[in-house]
Image 1 (tube, rainbow, N blue to C red):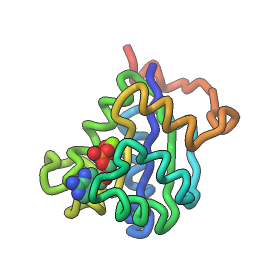
Image 2 (image 1 turned 90 degrees about the vertical axis):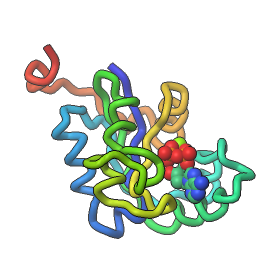
Image 3 (image 1 turned 135 degrees about the vertical axis):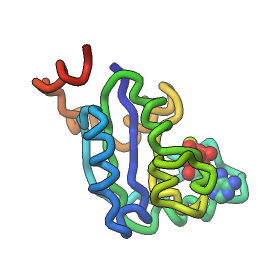
Length: 149
Ligand code: DAT
Ligand code: MG
């Protein structure tokens, strides 16, 4: 089982899409093991998007991600990282496959509604950046036998 970090960005929260987006991951069968709302500080945003320092969109991106509350979650499941990225769709919503979250809810690249870790290394890093170990809830779900064979 794999864990990944997902975050409804400030545009998604302002547009009342948090519930709908959480729901897609629930319905798919992923287990939510961490969930919270908060405002990202500038310092944390710069750490989170560290790989993009120096790029022309970096400052607007940090401004945007700190502009309002986000809803962050950690989900667990088989292939969670790549499956979630697939459910999100391409970074540019206009290029995202039909039915994906970014295709369904976005138009502009800088308002693409959701963040998701892109590799095991970034998942571990981002979960550690935004969640304390004790905020991750370990529990069993009886319905797992209806999701996994
Ligand atoms: P992703 O969010 O799909 O992992 P990324 O890590 O390359 O994409 O970039 C982080 C965010 O930065 C992305 O969600 C939107 C913004 N962004 C990326 N490339 C951009 C660009 N060329 N112009 C404007 N914003 C961009
Ligand atoms: Mg990324």
